[in-house]
Image 1 (cartoon, rainbow, N blue to C red):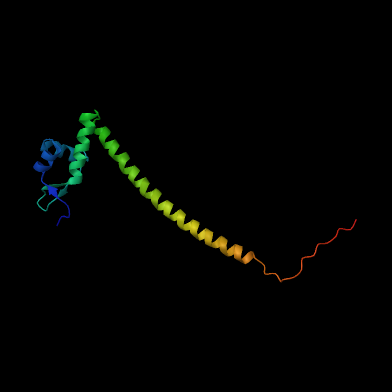
Image 2 (cartoon, one colour):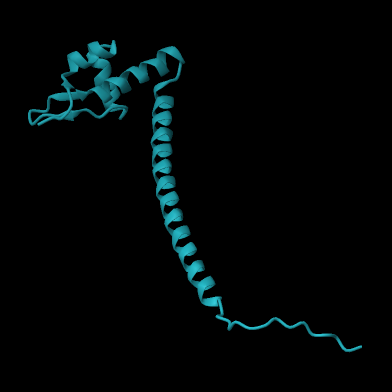
Length: 127
């Protein structure tokens, strides 16, 4: 059912070094979003636990309040989204650049005029 390890709330809280009630508060504030079983038991992934540790570092280590943590996560999500968009645009630019180079090659080729072999003669100017 799950491809990665999942933890119940008590284990996740212990791994993150906080009280299980804190995890519930963070969930209500949309800081974490654990999966749920059919019986509504919360299941935390390792990514969730890492996020909990980051929240703890930001709040306790740096003094950021929870509203600030929410904003940091929103900005982080926006950065990831923009990086994905930038990668897509870079791929599209490379594709268009390749097509442009191909078309320029065709234009250059069609601009060449075949010439007959002959003698080159210099004209003397009339004075």
